[in-house]
Length: 341
Image 1: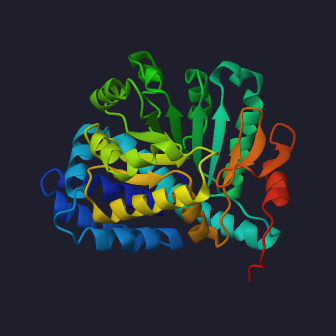
Image 2: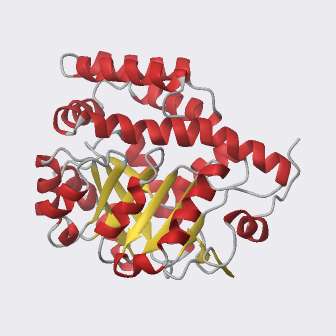
């Protein structure tokens, strides 16, 4: 996949456009989206790129300021590798594999998987994690969201073995050190996502200085909603220059509150007011999955390898990838409701 003709052509065009963005960000950004539409084959890419095309007709869009800033400060290889792994490997080639297997086997396959990993205990189950991602790639899954609860360095050994996948590492700002970034300097398929808490300013400064791709995330409960709705979080976030400002609710947050926050995120994204892209880590991922394969499924595994539904944490099944193959788990927890023709 890495050296497929289509990917090589797209990469070449993207590299050329990234150079041009520095001189003419508005025109070059629009040209990049138009070019991507010509190459796009899948339903998600068509939907995403047509939406981007419409948004970029707004000449006052803050994204016209965000994009040249990102190009100037983020290592080009990180932009290209991470972007191609998500946009091409995951949402084009992977999506096609997902739909083919779903039609044949009649179970749902997520476009991304969330993993909670303790780096301190990683080596106790390192072979199982390797096997999980190998199995996932065979099913068409190339995007992985890792909630790193403590030590990150051991997890980098896992990521290094899968250069065709994209990894988002959710972590504490305290985890971001020059030593960690030295360890991950050659891993271009990683985006760090920092919790919006004490120390986030310094961590973002380190990542920006080192040319890393990064985002921030805000985990909220019902009592935090006013901080979101009044614009404080987004206003503060854009000062930190993250690519995405991500939100996700705790399991105790009522459904109607989560729905209201998601509507707010969608509205702010459409307004293009902030120099960072608001993104709901639960609902937007679920939405993407529904475009790729009609029936949405959100899959996560906790530190014990046990399955949980990301969209509805109250749904629990006693299946662990430490004990069962990924496909077998998906057959049990995510059977197709309708037959694909």
